[in-house]
Image 1: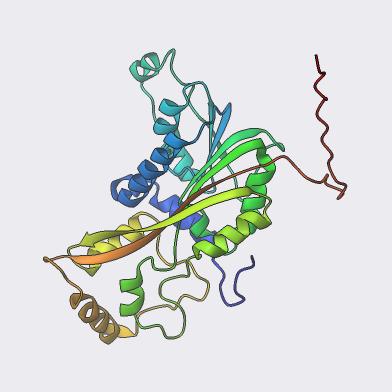
Image 2 (image 1 turned 60 degrees about the vertical axis):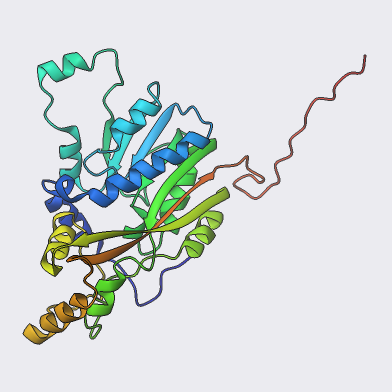
Length: 297
């Protein structure tokens, strides 16, 4: 799939924002942790014993523990485009902490990398885990092609993303003049098409809606800012039409208040897909597989 001509994301702004948010991300990452828990539950029904796992868009490394407990023999690699996030993921481990970890999982290797240009060899990974990364790409197809490239045959991609109804209350409340206030999120069906175009086989996806509640609009905007998740569209407007714009937005959201709280909808798309046996070589020739004939007794 290709991104709409009028929608692009400012990558340099995203790198800067997520780098700045590294110190505060974990305190507001309620959604990411809940989605990771649900992704992990899906692995209960998938038989795979990965040798090497890539956590793509690993952030502060909060998902490393779960992956290590589930696959204690696997080598773990974390990749993120924001270096301060990786610094946070590495952390400062005390001597006591290092002694406690002896005999357990080796600490993850960390790489600063862009999802659309991964510094890994072809077919070098068994599992790519990507929690809420794809929604930060204007067009996910180049990154999905890279994930397909680095996976070994029969390797697994496990992912989550945000769908179009994410922050629908905020989108409706904010005046949509001279630019988009809440940037576009990719529809589940478009994401499925991109997976197939990237070469993945048998994609399985579903969608569910989670609702977080906030005391007021400022609390919601604070969480978005501290997690690095503010609007990064190049078409985003500057300012909010003065005090009248803010007042109108607050009034619109107040009409939605239930039990003293303001709702914020997040459409969660989850899925997985496999890298199947190739049907053609890179130069387009068909791959023929022959099985030895069983001898009759």
